[in-house]
Length: 453
Image (tube, rainbow, N blue to C red):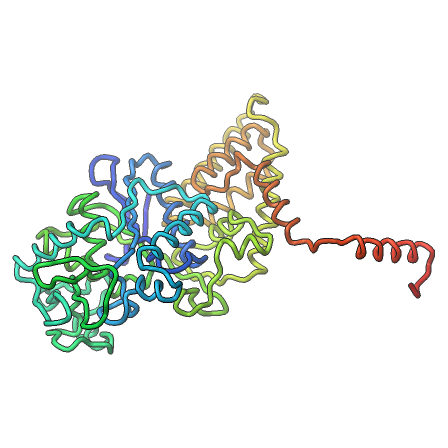
């Protein structure tokens, strides 16, 4: 299996850490607001990747974080903690907000049939491991303290800082954020540990050697938790393309500095955005839809999953209600095809020609997935199979084999069709007795060619 590696900017064959075992760390949600369809694209395609790796024969340990502290509104070193901001917006505590939106996240994942990670780790449950990592960096001379602000990582000490994005140090300095913190030695330096500001009165704070009331920086959590569960070096790390220039660049810097080993991660896999009307779907822009919005419009969440499979994970995808409805129509056709196929036990002896066809379809499907997770091509093979003349039992087996990766619940096709029917019925306006009487009157009038009524 081959994947595009952001670090080397080439498509490379996947080599496991140990024989066929590999560790995969996926950047998860910041639980201060609703999980939206833009997030779901990333998590669904992570799920497809893990399923494909496992079908290929890899033993995958899938770890995903839950960011429930430390992610500032700037995505850098300034601004309000997103959890604290969400608490004010919701009229709750930061802890309550984190719990509420983590539950919403898992409900959304279940709706789109994402397999739970082997390890789901909250930042607030791993404060000590993050603190120890910062202490290690301090001991090795990679950090400095800015009074009343935080502990910062000195990026000038690394010759290869920024290698993930391919930017040279001068370019990164020129493009550094304008919200510079006074006291930074370099524009690209970043906080690994933050101090509560005077009068801030944060809900989420912990004592540290540098301040009595303090909290971890956003980047440090992913380094600490990934290495805790997968070791100082592991195979695959996924995220959105917006993570490349800052978050993942800083993860690499602090992890390799602390452990003294390279590479921290062998393959970096990044997903492109889901857009709406030409803009990235995001919480900050307020232009997002959720699973609940899909269902309110009568669209099954798995139809949305099918829509995503039709686009390559590294390509932008523009979401419209029209293409969502189109995906639902296609999904219903697929489900009906599966329902109409005879049971697996109904077999015929395959001719050599049909036997070769079955094998060819399987090979086409795997070849597509192994070519940088080309789900559009793999999906095309599935549609080809539905129209083929191979025996029904073998067709059924092939479709379920494909669905081990696609995750469209084809083995429960009849049940899903009923769910779609219920969703669509819920969209129909309630017909009161008065409205029904009027409809009956008009129907009778039309039958009598009474065009005035």
